[in-house]
Amino acid sequence: MIHGDKKASGFFNRFSFGKSKYDGGEDLAFHESFLQLYMDAYVVVNLETNDIADFNCHMITLFALPPDVHLRKLQINQIMMRYLEEDSENKDLMMNRIPDCWEGEAGFINYNKEKFYTCVASNIFYKDDIKWQIISFRNITDKKNATQELKSYKLNAEKAARAKARFLSSMSHELRTPLNGIIGTSNLVLLESDLPENIKRHMNILKYSSEHMLGIINDILDFSKIDAGKLELVRHSFNLKECLTNIVEAFEVQFDNKQLAFIFLQPDAFNTINVCSDEIKLSQILNNLLSNALKFTLIGNVTFKVIIENTNEQTTTISFNVSDTGIGIPVEKQSEIFQGFAQVYTDDQSRKFGGTGLGLTISEKLVNKFGGQLKVESVPGEGSCFHFSVCFENAKPKEIKAKVQHDVGFEHITDTQGLRILVVEDNAINATILISFLHRWGILVKEAENGIHALELIKYHTFDLILMDLEMPQMDGYATIKKIRETDLKTPVLAFTASLLEDMESLITESGFNDYVLKPYKPAELKKKILDYAPHRKIDYA
Image 1: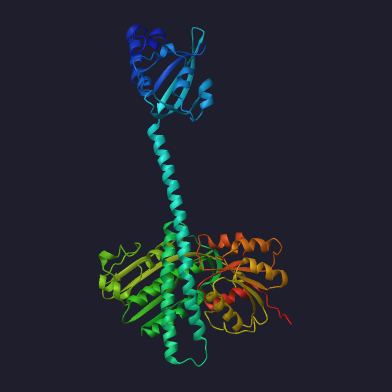
Image 2: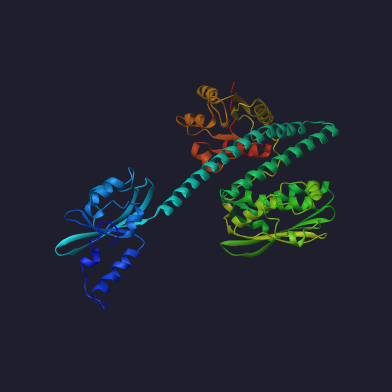
């Protein structure tokens, strides 16, 4: 046996375990050589005395032992006391007695003061009425370090993701807040009667530019959520024909302004098709495809065709096709169009048509969420066709709620006359715009600039609805709603926010809000939210 007591023979030379086809010393030499070559370090311990009876060469290497250390003169406890790491796993167990037939991890500091990790295993046998224990030490330092590095990488990635989410939320708030002022003011001015045509034209340009900027912000935020795997479908029941009609009507004016023919083809049976899916995400896909067709078509037409592929009692499969007579996409570039930030046209064309290059990327990912695949067919100079199919779960007609058709009728005040609303908003511009709309609808308004002021008003007044900003000084919306819900569970409270957060709906409802209004908002959408949550009742406040 190498190392230590050179006169002592190896353990397997001193204890025979039965006969084999090898004769005498050849058999023992084979076993001794085999275990010396085994890559794990091992020691054999006499459990009556705790003395180390034998060990292999890898025990020396693993613990970096010097030539003058004689392991056979030591007890196993001494090895543990001398080399076991202070904060090692299973330290107490290793310091006392390693159990029979046990396996676990332990950290050590070798003779050269270098840390290493091992997987320790033990087994026992009896020989000459003595109980012996074989303890093996497998070096898992590389594996352990890799695991630690992976954990550290994961923690850093999670930290970076949280920082990114906070940054995007902050940027969303900072960008949406002034845009809310611009778009809101534009809407208010455009409602003025006898507005000169040149002023109306300038305001429409201002509104369009602001909404275009808002679309770019939304694309970046959506792409970030998709890239982080945070974007999920929200299922609810809706009428498919109504959804598509709203989309088409919103584009008709834009196509007319560009003097392009806009053809919408749908089956007659669409009137009765109600589905359970994510209407907002579906609309986002179709809006992106129609916007692209509008942008890249200079002459000719755009056709939006919807076909019922299959229907039964449980599901309905619909195919959506958007084709145009635009500039088309080169064959070699068609594989790149769904990549984030990709611009497949020349620099001059990209500058001419604009855009972030995210619309198709987002659409393709959303179609995947619906269980479909967005495909493209295109010929340069002749046009493009984007198409996909979705299998929808059928919904019952009674589950469908009537929706506000764009901005039509949002100025009528008979349905909101006399409602009393508390507006909690610290931004003076946003508050002024919001209150202007509420007054136009015959709503009585009280205003608070922060949560503390709001709680004071709630003590002395009764409100049908509370519209409350989330980001406010002194007491923000989250702290305020918590205080309100301690005594009032009935009054509807809508979060009024410019921050587009992950899991917005669950975060808002779990905090105690009934719903939220995202700034900038369309007046019709705001009014619909008010009607959804504030039951109409005539109130005499005299």
